[in-house]
Image (cartoon, rainbow, N blue to C red; front, side, top):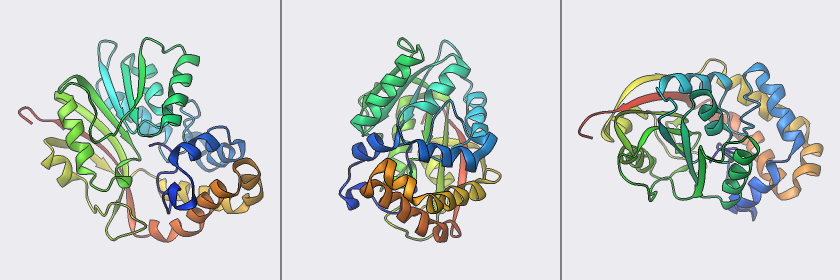
Length: 267
């Protein structure tokens, strides 16, 4: 799920579904301009994201996952597909993306078509914790700003371990929370969960400037309330503006992490 993954409440709490939210934000000019302004050169414009992944994050994953034209990787919680397609372009690999939102999957399929990825990109509606793919059938995995939204995030990591061939790698971004906040998963450190799932953590770092970028997004949202309401409607804009008001306090108690881990033999 590559939308505003840190939202302070589920879309359903505001009478919306994730499908409704995706349908509104994907064409929201005001929201995209906010992201571009806050991220500057770090905004991965080609990926067209509304999560907090950066150009540097995606470049690092393209290099670290060791993918090439003969490989296939899975994006668990792919959203509208932008990050996965960018990595597929940079590596030459084939991508399979899954997301629970039918609207997100339709957007991802359309984006893949516009970019000429018909034979190298497949997107389907599925739960990231229980896909129907064959075990050990992928050479890499991606999971961008998803784990904090899953009640039991280890289930996604275990599914990634099931899908990957031994020695393959997963790249993920998420937030570590040390205390409860708005239903998000309380995980102070994802390394023990990865290790319990059969992964050896290769890198785990806190991206430079992540908090400043995220706070700037929220600041611009508050400043552009009128534009967001006009573009998104009152329900969707209210959800995002609520996040802009309340999330900054939570950020003082959390860390954003970028992780690359390798599936160990025998996992």
